[in-house]
Image 1 (cartoon, rainbow, N blue to C red):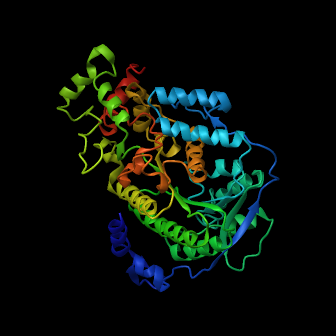
Image 2: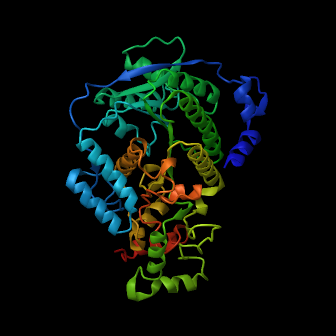
Image 3: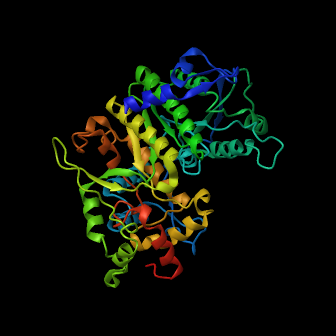
Length: 472
């Protein structure tokens, strides 16, 4: 992991305002710049804290082409606990993920507070990110996203993103939102002015943003709990560049916090389910047992596999990996070739940072999130049709609002519960004898890990099942 990150810092080049190209790592220490800015903080404070909160999860079933609208109901308390049990028994989430979500629900039901917790969110406006939920719970959020000045005068100015985040912050019970602005900007209650001034260009200003974050860490009380997470995405090679710049911010906060705070900061990532992951033995056994049985006695799945000469409906579970010590490791092949090599490399970079952080004593809240019907996914009709048939193979496609809530709950658990599986001091208890097993815990995979077939080989069958009305 260290070697992989070091290679990328050396292989990628940063081009400064004069057009000079320098290896990325060297540019960070040499003062190379595009904008020449120095950043400072502007803060939007929330409403009074109020009393105890309940943890609610929007949910009225999974997403399907016939039920595409956002959830109209929410779960909390006993209803949430019952649904967690249904998800576990249905193979949609793993037991330790359900336990983490339940822990967070119980934490707030018992009067717990996020007043001492600080979350740095790279890509704060992301559809898959936890910003809205954290502010709803009264957390202190540091938001990094695109400059609000972008698109000014156009149909979709970036200032609209910041106005949305400011509205959430102002309604937050006891929370706050800290944003980067150019040094010298005067704090103002004028939302329009602040929205245009807020934000930064991550790929042009990684050094400037990191310096600002280091200064911010220095202002925190030593008892603060800090977590920095990357929730960014861009298409193609831009995703890799964005991930590299985000990695520098994460490394900076982890290092600065380790020197100042009584608890080292945590890092956070949402792992895609469409990746190759080590999985619990129970998940691998379930996938093996389900092979060939999705359409029960019809036998059509094995026939489809034969007709495609083994290219489709391939077994999901790979041969167990023998280890030098300890039990064999089980792996599920969830890689999706359609997502391309840039996506895989960007995600690998996040895995490497999580492993390096974990081995250095930091909590690494990195867990698999479910396949989710975001607008960026379902606007592609092919994906929407495949999603419609995937429940036949044990999947539940989550609505965006549900994913946000359940993954935020796991994040809060990892940051606040020192007895969890993402804390390096507990690695022996949870069997993390290899750092790659870090990704095998607390998975909300939506059924992928326990599905009998690889996700890359069931798309056509899923779409056909949806069209012919064969879905369960």
